[in-house]
Length: 130
Image 1: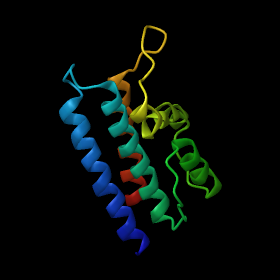
Image 2: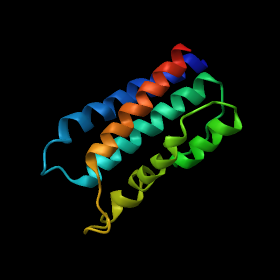
Image 3: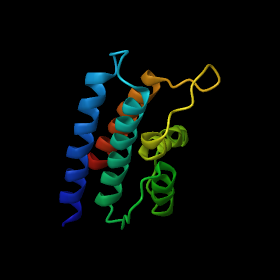
Image 4: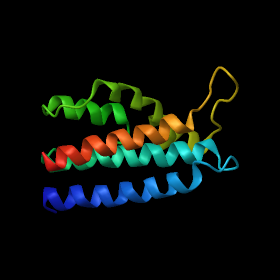
């Protein structure tokens, strides 16, 4: 598959996760694990879209930190605030099969997760146009 086609596929799939996130984020009965999972998935796919556009080989990577390392290794500039995105990585698998830690010492900020998706999307779309 051509790198532009693969990037577009990743963007389409990321938009599906973003759609689910937008539908569920304001519903207090939707589990944090579901919100975190779709936020993580959207971010992962958007990072992969940019990497694909630069013809970077992607293997089976689901850790956001590893994807950011590939961005750095390939000279693809990204905001330093993306360091915080690693907080979403456990939602890719860990919290899908066990409970999210709860309590005041482990709060999950849904709005931060949704805002993170929007920031990565804006960056990725600019990278594609740039």
